[in-house]
Image (cartoon, rainbow, N blue to C red):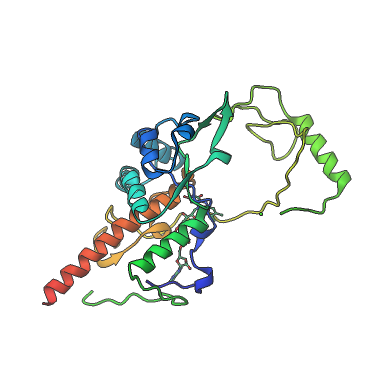
Amino acid sequence: MLEKGPEHKRGGNSFFTDGAIRFAFNGLEDIRAIMPEMTDEEAANIYIPPYNTTEYLKDLMRVTGGKSTPELAEQLVTKSYETIAWMKSHGINFQLIYDNQSFEKGGIHHFWGGLPVKTENKGVGLIQHLNARAKQLGIEIWYESRAYKLCKENNQIVALPVDKEQFLQTIKKYNDSVQEGSYNPTEKDGKGTKGITPPKSNWALRIEKGPFYVFPVTCGITFSFGGVHANSMGEVLDENREAINGLFVAGEMIGGIFYGNYPGGSGLMSGAVFGKLAGTSAAEYAIRRVTVKK
Ligand SMILES: Cc1cc2nc3c(=O)[nH]c(=O)nc-3n(C[C@H](O)[C@H](O)[C@H](O)COP(=O)(O)OP(=O)(O)OC[C@H]3O[C@@H](n4cnc5c(N)ncnc54)[C@H](O)[C@@H]3O)c2cc1C
């Protein structure tokens, strides 16, 4: 395997993720199957609504404005759970996303949004475990090795300096702009702000009671949303939509799945589903070639 970066920077964008990973599941039993360490006591204190393939597909189509290529979308959604189970079998551990995908009501943690799970220790843990498994399997990784050509044969912060007066003014202005309404973190509750720019559309609560946490915020590129055409087995397609012999693709390099937006957690899932499929296709291709040569 070739990796352009040096070993100490390995993991690409995946390293920096929250590790949130979206898959279809029929109920808590499916979640417990990939988190066998979950105790009955923990299970009794959580509520995770099922998130089936139909809902996943609907979310994918909704956020992409209906543009996601049907056969790729279908593949991502229907293969998501088996791929998660396969990842678990290769030593990837999972955790519930208590912090931003659940809220507590009556002593029960209610999960929402079809995204209850992340990889243990976020993207950092995912990359650690993937690399450990690759090593066990004897997969060789060449670092600082950029693929540049296709050969064809036959074809966290603890203190932040702020202007106190300005800060207090900003908070007051924000608090005054918060509209009345009922706060509901499970849906777009329409409880927004009025008179500030940019406005907040939902979930606006007054900042009144400490402790307060301050985070510096910056823009980032989640991913490019572009890439090469591929079929549902991860084979790259040419301009006539014919599979190019011996050329396979996975992860963000696949075009046609996400447009404009993506259901959070589907980037890693897509990488895993198509990584597995493309890997299988490539291995089958290599075996066929060896067999033919013999
Ligand atoms: C801050 C942030 C948070 C995110 N959080 C989430 C999340 O919680 N859940 C989620 O599903 N998605 C999340 N995403 C999106 C997610 O990061 C991507 O969908 C995912 O990482 C893509 O995986 P990948 O393997 O395709 O690419 P990458 O993980 O970026 O890996 C690409 C690798 O290829 C190497 N490379 C590039 N060019 C070459 C070359 N020519 N030769 C050899 N090697 C090369 C790079 O160095 C890199 O190591 C997040 C993105 C960002 C930026």
